[in-house]
Length: 406
Length: 214
Image (cartoon, rainbow over all chains, first blue to last red; front, side, top):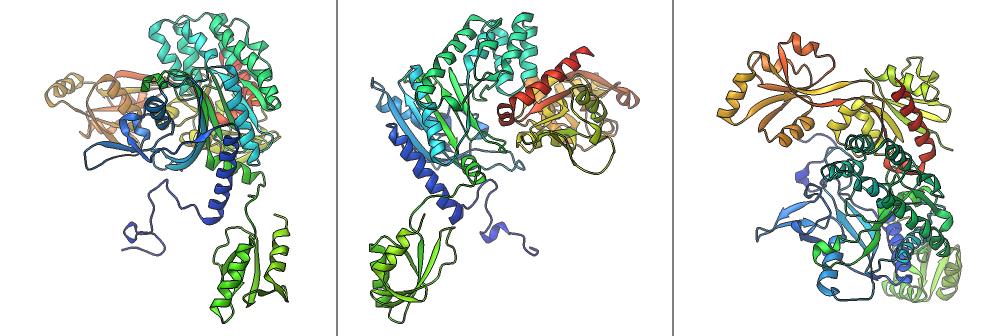
């Protein structure tokens, strides 16, 4: 038997772990964020792509199969709830823009689904927003997406964020000097975050003492300049630093110079990055808000060998950070709750008249106003309402309400 | 500037961790009184005192910025954190062990029956090890005193964490093979390591220096 307040799954009120209802107040805030992000992306020429919710499980190359929510359909095919949007972008590029020479700029805002171990407090569904710049291998392209990310976050009210910019080629330069059979072990230890083993394996594989200390210095390097990281670094790593040095002035020209910090210890967990990478963190948040970088070569695996860079924003983390920063969504007119009078016709007519003047109107009462500013009035007749003790024409009331500072 | 939050494993490595932190220039006076506070402010840092196996959880969620716990714990929990420094104390080994007098017999049985029963407190480490080896086993999860299992016929072998190996010997068990040697590690939350690099890298460098001088 079911005791007290516990929820019986068979009652239909339970949710699978990692899924939740987004209630009206938060949903409204998320819609405001979605609008801001997509408008900012559009100002840079990024056009929306809406991927399907379901993919073949075998299509996703970028993610471990154990991280996908999979199921069989009636054809016996193994499907997965969209684990990322990169897969859809790759497919669209390979199928429809294979021979395009111009750059393709795609933006998306979509829920993604990840399998998580139980008891970790992790969500299995969350919104991800992002852009992909396909077919532009230039540093200007890297600067463009980084500047776009900074502007999109600022537009959502997240001011003064620091953007960490690194380059996988710095660490890669050290790995390339190792014997073939040691490379993958060193690189995958570093991606998994085990820097102790990565350095130890590299040393065991014959990396010289000077190189080891150069690598260790690099992994701790986070600063506005890169000079200190050059000492004893391999040529390939130095070339990566040269690229970052060149990127600095470009970002400044794009208006985001002050927010940039070069971070050579940032090694993304995903293996497909090939050049400049970046992430955004916020105080008090244990997860990055956004991350991205160049992934030339990944699309070749889908049959479309084009340069690519882009980023993804974890919308729940962005939302958490902007709310913590005291943000309020700037959306729409206040809500007018209109008490009806005896004539339903007069009530509906007054409401219609007010809505035509731009006022949001709910008749009767509302159980949930989702954090909106609420005003109350009572219908007198089809063109008049009682508001703050006085009878007013609906035009006059609309004038008052629409002037209310939002 | 907000206090840097440091999760510390209470238990066998706690005393040496305090020595290491002090050597790295952190104030540990507030940890001395043996009180019951679990969140201990100490100047510009704040200590979170928890079970060794919970340290990676606090750190991976960013509830603590950095932490000190054993590599054994990191291997078994598999949480996503950065491992920055090998502190070189708290040494122990993950081993596969079997009754001294029946190793040959159990291998013979494996050839016949195709599977061995292995009791352990560390199912993740054990499963990964045997998968890598291509050995088929059935794991039996226990909460403690795993050495008992083969003696009473619950399992053929065990996977356990050993310090000196005395307990194994007293229970007439012999090491079949060693899976990994584990020591204490300084770990960091990925986002904290980016945001608070100066403070965390300074602590990491000081701890590294202390550890390699010993």
